[in-house]
Amino acid sequence: MSMHLVPLGVGDAFTARHYSTCLAVEADERWLLIDCPHPIRKMMQESPVEVDVPTFDAVVLTHLHADHVSGLEGFAYFSHFVLNRPCTLVAHPEVAGPLWDRHLAVSMEHLIDHQGAALPEKGFADYFHHLPLVEEAKVRVGPFTIECRRTIHHIPTFALRVTAGGRTLGHSADTAYDPGLIEWLAGCDLIVHETNYGAHTPYEKLAALPPMLRERMRLVHYPDDFDVEGSVIEPLRQGRVYVV
Image (cartoon, rainbow, N blue to C red; front, side, top):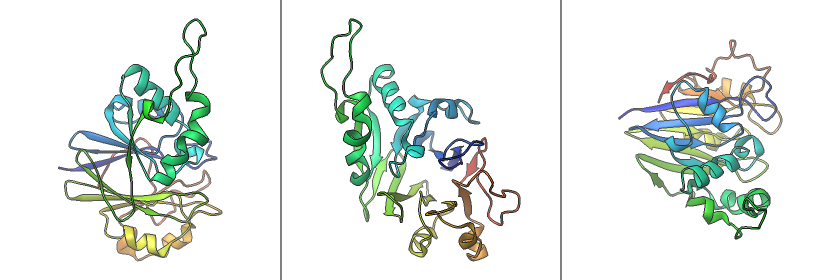
C-alpha cells in the first residue's frame, strides 16, 4: 500500500497567490483532510485528483486559526444536509473543545425552517463525530494511524505523524522553530514543515539542517515572497501529487 499527499493549499494566512495550507492524504483509496480552510470545495475541485466532501473519511485539525478552519462550517453543513451524516473530526481536546462554543455555534446553532420558524437548537454532536487526539497515544482512522505533538504557537496547535502501509507522513503544523519537534518528525518518510515570518519557523533554521533530513523535507505555509526556486528545501506546490 502506498500513501499519497496532495497539497490543496500551500500558503499562509495572508496569501494572495495560493490557497491557505491544507493537505489531502490518501492510502488504500481512503482519504484524510488535514485542516479545512475556505474555500474548501473550490480547492478540492481544482486539485489534480477527484476529491470532494464525500471522499474524506475524516478531517484532522491542527489548530483553530482561521486560515486552517474557515472552511469547516461549510464542510460540516454539506455533510449534515447533503450527505446526512456527521463529519468525523480528529482533533486534540484543546482544539475541539473551543471549536463549537467559541467559533461555530454563532452560525450553526440556531436555524429556521422555510416559514422562518426556529428549528430545534443544534449542537456539536449534530454535525461532528469527534475522535480525540491525545499526545503519546495513537488514533486509528481506516488505514491511517495518527499521532500528535504540541507545537510552539499562539494557541494550542498540534503537529502530526500519519502512518499507513508502513509509510509515515510528518506535518509540523504552525510552529516556531523547535529542535524537539524536528527530532520527533525526523523518522518520517516525508516531512512537511512550515516556514514563515514572526512566530513561525525561519527558513534559515531549516536550511541549516543536515542534508539527509532536508532531502525528506518539503516546505509549506510559506509567504508569497518566498523564493521557491532558490530554496535548498523543496517547497510543496499546489496541483501536484507526492508519494510519501
